[in-house]
Structure formats: structure tokens, C-alpha cells
View 1 (tube, rainbow, N blue to C red):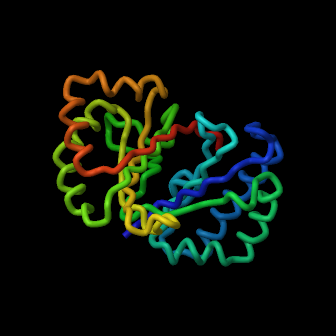
View 2: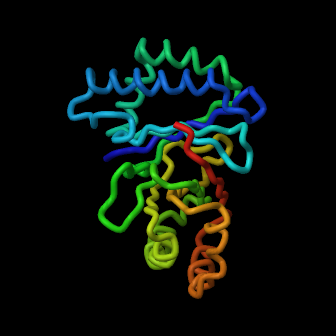
Length: 226
């Protein structure tokens, strides 16, 4: 099953994406492409095909998000352990708060699509993307799947033509081992467009159902920079 990697950095330049930071990240993506081609069977060619990209958060511009698709967590871990990663990541680390790096994987999904079926806009071509983390009590995970499956079309129809996908976070958040996270990722015209969802005629049906199975939901928005 595929997994989606999400890595969150805090930059040290007070929300400014410096040319040096951008260049270091661009080099890291290039080297990662080369490593994947050399070491992974059937690896897609190019970072976009692998869902690899860099985004800046709109709410807190000091936060950047690095993404990629992998066949498994162990495949990603092989890249992390490589000499090539250690070399390029040391350059990236010069521009970020090393104590505030956090990352996790989303199970069973390639969320940052570069291509879609006709009529849908891929996430990597979207002006803005949302990353929504739905917090669910561990014993309600199956119930969440059932309830969300029943109302998902309301959200997806509103979000069209932008693609939205989701899956369960694999690694537990420290101190919250009894809470699962369902992560939804997709594109929008703008943050303002996403915030119009509560005005949708069927929003109350969606919201009333989701509140029965969620403890909370955190949504952040990002714009692509690489």
C-alpha cells in the first residue's frame, strides 16, 4: 500500500522563503529523484510524479511542508538512511529550526497528485491546498470510516474541480496515543473559497454527521513554492 509523507519545518527567516533555502530544497528534490531512479524499482520519473513538492503555510508563513509518495514507510526510511539524504538535508537544516521538525505518513493514499482524470484538477496544480487533521477516539475509527463514507460526496462535490483524498495517519502523535488522525488533503481556488463550505446547502448534513465521530478538526492551508 502506498503512503504519503508529510514533513513540517519551521524556517528561521521569519516566514521569508530565502533564495538559499529554496535552492537547498530544490537540490534535495533533484538528488532524491536521482536516488529513487537508481534504487527503487518502478519509481515514477521526476519529483512531481512522486508527489514531491514544497509548500508554505498561509496561517503561519514560517511553516513549510515537504511531501512525497512512497510504496511503504520502509522505502522512505531507506532514503532517510542514505548518504545522499544526509548530504542534502544538512544543507536544508541550515535554514530551519532543527528542534521543530515533525513528520508522519498517511496510509494507503497518494494525496499529492500531479495528474487526474478529466474534469479534476490535481493537487499539485491547485492554487491552495488544505491539510485537515480529523481527531478521532481510537475506538471510533471504524465508525468514522462508516460515517465519513456516507457524507464524503457532499464535501467532494463542493470542492470540485479540485481533487481531495485522505487516509489514516500511521505514526501516533506523542502524548495522544489513544487518538487517531484522519488526514484529508485537497486543492482549492483560495482559502476564501474553502471557507464558503458552511454555506453549502447540504453542509449541515455533513457537519452533523462528522461531529458525532470527531473530537476536533484542525485545518491549515498551503501554497506551493517548489
